[in-house]
Amino acid sequence: MPTEFRLYNVDENDLYKRKSKQEKEKILLEMVEYALKYGNKPAARYYNTYPSTVRRWVSKYKIGGVDALKFK
Image: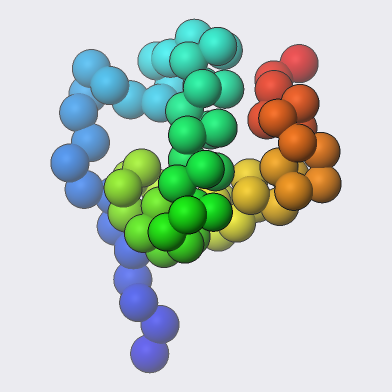
């Protein structure tokens, strides 16, 4: 049976959607670096997101580098 992932410890004042574009890009880079060092599941737990989200951003990073994490 697959592990169910839930988002815990989400602070209303620190939600991702309330961040500026630059802050989001910085968080994404930190998350990708964390995932490359420790793995996708630990990164997902640490950043309160899902492993599929981490995999998607890591994949983009591997293809396009830091520029792939930038918002247009």
